[in-house]
Image 1 (cartoon, rainbow, N blue to C red):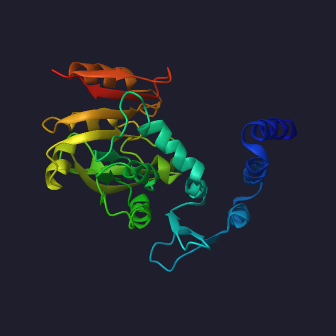
Image 2 (image 1 turned 60 degrees about the horizontal axis):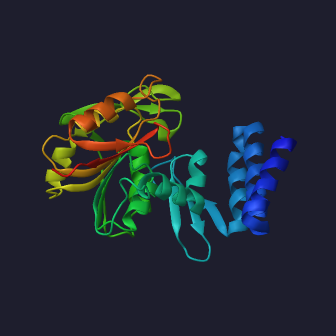
Length: 289
């Protein structure tokens, strides 16, 4: 731990200066404490984590027992999440990461006034990053425990419309399997299995979702569906989509669906690349006829 801390600290100090060095060292130490200390005191670790940033952790009065909120003391801004392990998604660095990973690519970037559909919006961080340039964003999230926080977090952004359903290859209902972490809730087997619980949620194709929300076309479709990306793509048959970004992490029974998705996108007339040379995220842009 000491060697890792020294290495990371020197790197941060060299690249980002003293202020960032102090912040990241504080973050690193508390992360390691969370790894070794009992879960019963994790809430206190999160409180310590955010105090230097002028942010407090609170449990709002709600019927949802699992909801947490971070509140910025100076601005009054709040960020909601269902489990303590999601608290760092409020960091500006995570917001910047979502923007750079998904929406600043050279091949399929968000352009001003684009219409965007964000499949797998989770807590809304990627959605809010998209909303910086988009004229409208549909934020699709199937997990009930994540969707309540998504609605809270995007409530002040007028161009975002939350949609509670699983994007699929048919319209109806589907079982959503709950993982140990809400970020792993999936139609397939979760990466981190929970107690074997599942909830029934609406399932809709992208074509259906677009029609219900008055969209005649989609400029950019981002898909991160915990291994269910192939079925989401199959639900796009009649709606014109100019750009598609697909997260191809190995979450489909431990395998990545990137080969199937790349083949399907090329068959549909898209130019497909993975800009960083890694297949984890595919960027596709419809070729001009």
